[in-house]
Image 1: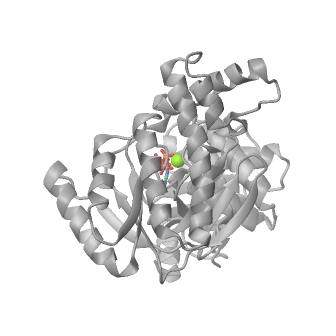
Image 2: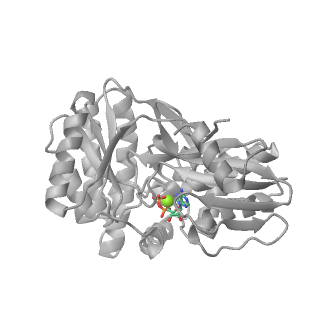
Image 3: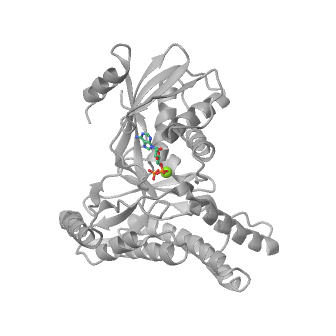
Length: 387
Ligand code: ADP
Ligand code: MG
């Protein structure tokens, strides 16, 4: 998308003139480490090429007026001097939240007209929600000439998702969208937010995302239910060891020992989280040392664990993974994101990518009569000011 086009679109919506800024916020894909972030565990995401643009200009009347190309119709409006509450349209909450929390923090702000334009699918598990929050925050900061360190920015955006979108998410999405690094995936320790960037060699590997086009609703209760099942597991282990803070502190042998004391569901939820943490660390090590076959196997094990233990996959995603693993040049494949639909991510030999995408589309269309969207992506930088 070229910047002149974006500015022309902005002028059509808000009128010409003034200094117009463009901020971008990428989507993200998590290579491995699913539902581990809110258990103080490890995740391994990277920022991706599809992104959300915020074309914006300061206003002098203290109002924020937002329009989205995906929701033509009424703008979302709020005043920096009034109380900002969540409401309709729902997409506006992804703007209201960050603005309200910046005000609460006492950051001096100015009003803004903003046109939001994206190349990132919504609700597809590629974190358009975090891109909305991080992009809104970066835009407000840019217009006011303010700065914020990446960790505070991610925390503010996570809180916005909790309070304004009602999704009790962990810290992964906002951290990678705000702080990704081109050419690298980020091994993030969600306990202390420490990060290690691992290079992905594009001559060896391509990351391919396949969107099942099946939609999920994370505020549907499944996410909160998984969180509370993990907490139930933690409470059990705390009885004998009060220093246990999260499932991060538990080893697989302890899960097996506790099998008869836990309900079957809680046992399996805990088993997923604990084994997923181990897989995530091994995976990062495998990529560092170019053991791609081994990394690929871990992705499939991760998928199986999400299907059988965490129960967050759907048949369409299981089919995409199974099909991928029967195509030449594929190291590994798994569902990515919160679950109940969305995308798979696969590690593929670069020379096999075109064939992989053609085969998987054909097969999925044949089975489900749905055209999936498939694309290869490099790892990109986190959100930035384009101009
Ligand atoms: P995901 O983060 O996986 O894409 P979520 O359900 O967490 O899915 O967030 C999707 C929501 O974010 C959408 O329903 C919409 O409210 C909001 N959103 C995302 N992109 C845009 C956009 N370009 N314009 C307006 N709202 C958006
Ligand atoms: Mg989201």
